[in-house]
Amino acid sequence: MKILVINGPNINMLGLREPEIYGSKSYADLLAFIQSAAAEIGVEAECFQSNSEGAIVDAIQAAHGKFDGIVINPAAYTHTSIAVPDAMKAVAIPAVEVHISDVAAREPYRRVSYTREACVKTIAGDGFEGYKTAMRVLANKEW
Ligand code: DQA
Image (cartoon, rainbow, N blue to C red; front, top):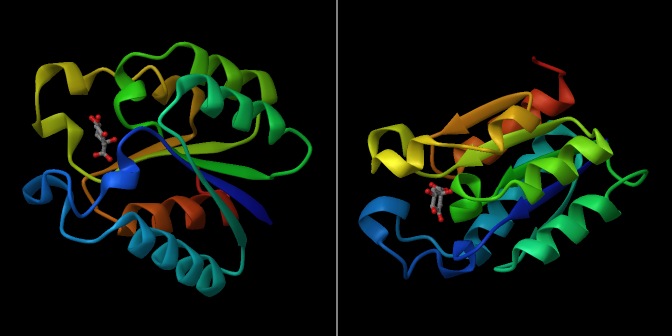
């Protein structure tokens, strides 16, 4: 099974950005974590990160026919983008939404997710571990 892991804006700043919320580990650490988790679960993971909404839409469109599942942390675009879930619905690849922090316990505007309706599941507040759970959900079709 091939899974595309998409991370949105500022996820490349992990380690530096608000460590009290996102922890002290870097984006490189996240990539290493995802690869080792994927190997453990027995799936192939390819990672993509962009700060641009259009590039994320392009990556989702390009996943059609190439990937069996998508793990997506759209970051701030979660709360603003309609184009991202539209692209996800267009390709109809099973997807799981992940947030490192517990978005429900933060500012009210973070409780809105346009991405959620295009996903089979949402995982929030479990740090890096959420990406592993998301890959397992897709591998085992746990929805
Ligand atoms: C985030 C939560 C979002 O609200 C925020 O804009 C992010 C990261 C998370 O992983 O917790 O950039 O998606």
